[in-house]
Amino acid sequence: MKILDKYILKTFLVPFAATFLIVLFVLVMQLLWQTFENIAGKGISVLFILKFLYYTSLSIVPQALPIAVLLSSIMALGSLGENYEFAAAKSAGISLQRLVRPLVFLTLLLSGINFLFLNNIFPYAIFKQQNLYYNIKKKKPALALVPGSFNSDLPNYQIKFDEKYGEEKNLLKNVLIYDLSSRQGNQKVITAERGKIISEEGSRYMTFILYDGYYYEDHTKSSKSISKKAKMPASQAKFKEYEFNIDISDIVGDGSLDNENFKNNYKMLQLEQLNDTIPLLKTSYNDLLLSRANSISSISKSKQLYKYADSIKAQNIDSTSILENFTLKDKISILNGSKTKMNSALTNIKNNIKNIKWKRKTLNFFDSEYYGRIALSFSCLILFFIGAPLGSIIRKGGFGLPMIMAIAIYVLYFFGNTMGKNLAEESSISSLLGSWISALVMIPFGIFLTRRATKDKGLFNIDVILNPIKNLFLKFKSKKDI
Image (cartoon, rainbow, N blue to C red; front, side):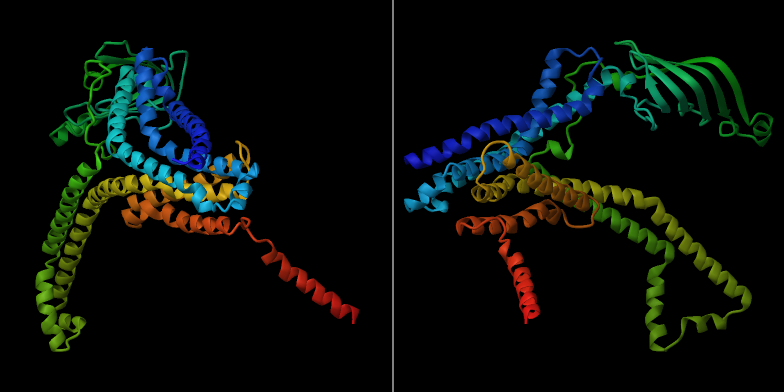
């Protein structure tokens, strides 16, 4: 390896190591801050928290690597330009392409490493992190309850409250509880102004103590006879204090933080496993569509209608004139029958549309993850060909301007990636296009910057805009002088 190549690599690798660690730290802290509420105050040992941070760091590495490549390439090339080392190299007959050649090979290597990381280590890290996070949440289920929305994690109960307060965050304000535990199907609703949760570690029960509330239970579902329903359709009462227990043994389990309950999430699978799973999901989705289509066809009797359609067309018979061959009573009967069939078909569609949408969305999740990992592997190379020419154009090193530009570029890249992923998950665009939409935007921008840097031109040629305006003013002035 030549001395020049070693020097260029050193100029790149020093800021790369620093920026990679900084970016990784920031992203991990951001994710930790989001999950802090579910971890803090649960008596979790430092060892398990460090283990959670370790797996989180591994899952963040593929995202931190492209940012570090972008930022360090701007800093390295900007520093060379700022110190007039580019000018010295060009005076010696060394082109920009020759200078960045070792960095291109290094970026290709980093893209390969990122691909291997995404295919092997990332699924394992997500698997361990998600299971550990779920087990930490189960440690004290009371702290996992979120104010402002219905919490359905507790078996047979829907719980909502406005605020959670107190030193242990176990005091509730404005509580609403739907009790679905009755085997007879009774509807039970409990409201209270205040509440308290008692959940001891190792206990299979969570105790709720409610104050100043109202209790209502509907008995009509459990009553078989009309007379019993009429005698006691419901019971209701006000209370000063009401206490009941919820069995949480199914949630807490044996309390171990090493339990592995989730294994088949799309993020936990390697590319080969995703590739094997996607055809199965497509077959299942297509079978569901076919069965629903056959069901609707059977209800509406579309085969018979299709069979008669040709004969009607051949005789040029208007469909409205067919009804004229029947009496008014028969017309009403025919139309009512048609209406009933169409309503049945619409009901069939409405009852199955959520299931169809969810199956399609699940398939999109797997598709987007498959193409997204491949696209993310190439993001190191794409962002390098934006950062390197940009650094040589602005000729500024350090963490000032390069940091601002790198953040702006990556925000655009990340926004495009997120938008494409969301559109693909909702079936608005294909998963392939959604995963590569950011790359399709950034690649032309990278080509533009590379050409500008190769020709030793600025980022934008302002004269192209200013010269026509200047000429217009000069022309106007000359006419005025005449």
